Length: 141
Image (tube, rainbow, N blue to C red; front, side, top):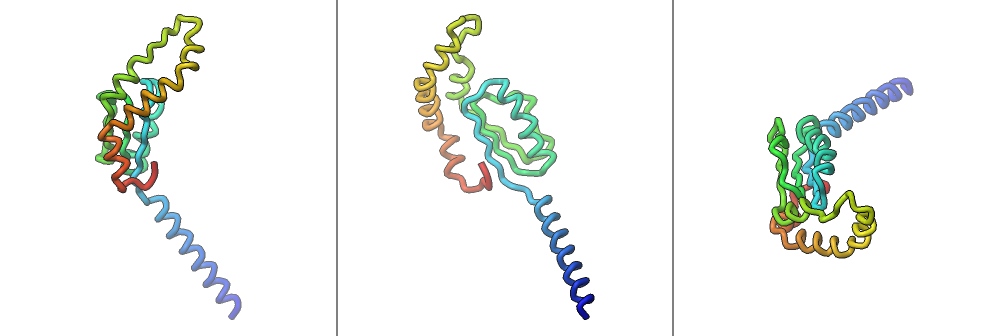
């Protein structure tokens, strides 16, 4: 009789493990990715991740970027929504740093408080950002 219970318990545990694995693998989430302070290189790095989450993993992804997305940022499914802020695109496209200037790293470092104020003000004034934050559809940010 004890062998029967051990076998039944093992079988039940196996079935529950399989069901949990299937559910966790097949669950699609609503993911919000915010990238307000960015450069084209940051966008190029994030693009494969965003595309994989939407196309290969089946998640519903909203990607809010600080630059206008390139036309090649297309999903093969309807799981991707790409948004941008025109105000942040203007700020992000001109960092006012000359890379040939030997003091550019110091100026960039000491300008961080001023730049953060500019970025935070632009984000706070962006209506799309407020809409995304007030929308409770995202499972994770």
